[in-house]
Image 1 (cartoon, rainbow, N blue to C red):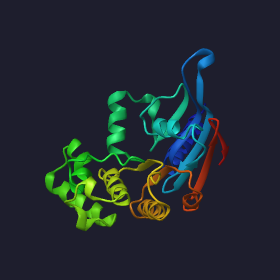
Image 2 (image 1 turned 135 degrees about the vertical axis):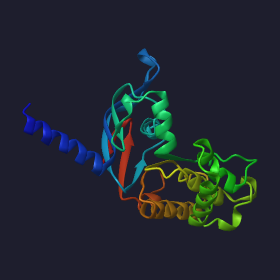
Image 3 (image 1 turned 60 degrees about the vertical axis):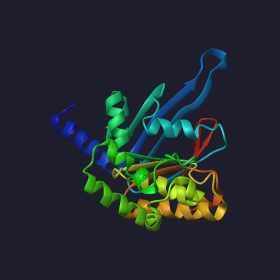
Image 4 (image 1 turned 90 degrees about the vertical axis):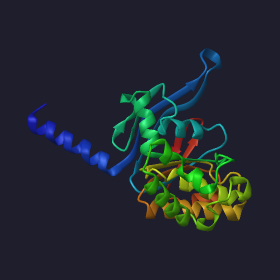
Length: 242
């Protein structure tokens, strides 16, 4: 390769990293061995540009949660490559993956995942405590995020004192605590009624725009899919629509 072609190649890599928050190439993941093996993902490839809200749809067992876990660095593929924010996950050890999840990725779960004995404000502040943020910075960020999700007046309430929709809003605020570049949400409206679910999805879309983050959201609700910039469909471990 000539010096000029090498430079051009390097520029292409930088440009691609600047355009895409997530890049998935030929991803395979199986569970079990031999005839009993379950092939959760079969050669999945896609890209997510920065600043997009991408919805991931598919029937139960199609591989959605497996894919989210891989992109979020919670699991490793059998084959293939995942790049998040310009970082190849295969080059990271356990400590590197831990830092990636702590500093650059925010997770939102269907079950909310809040700590029952902590107030809404304390739940939101947990990620910042883990990275030992300055207490004043933490308090200011918590107050800002609770206001962002419409819960400024509920800071002192515990999860059991909040509705399902309010609990999910706290979970969204917590996911944003460390200013992540990527939000990963697994059926975030699955336990909510249709009206509340729509409000939460609209909040996620507003967060993507206002906080300048990228989001990959698994959902099966057709009404919610309409709020996404793009929809990816998984069927039997393969992308069938992109």
